Image (cartoon, rainbow, N blue to C red; front, side):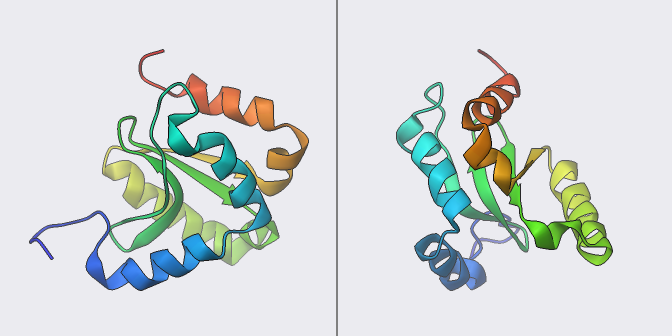
Length: 122
């Protein structure tokens, strides 16, 4: 590992691979809409690590992180963990968008529009 490497660190490689092989239904659906630069020619990565965290989706050109939140993210302890995690990732210059899983299925066009709205250049 390179010194000061913060993205895709080696010790998380197996975990990232496992998460990619076992996407949740919501992650799989969103991935079909983002992969192959399908959204405004922006490349996204899934299950990408930054520091000690693995994010659901990451767009390197936009420093944009997309997180899908299921029921577990709405309990107080997890909310605190998410806030601490977000603070660390934002300090590195990233923008974080969080979507409830149900929105991926109920209003996918609105989710994509919200993601596009955070692109630096249209």
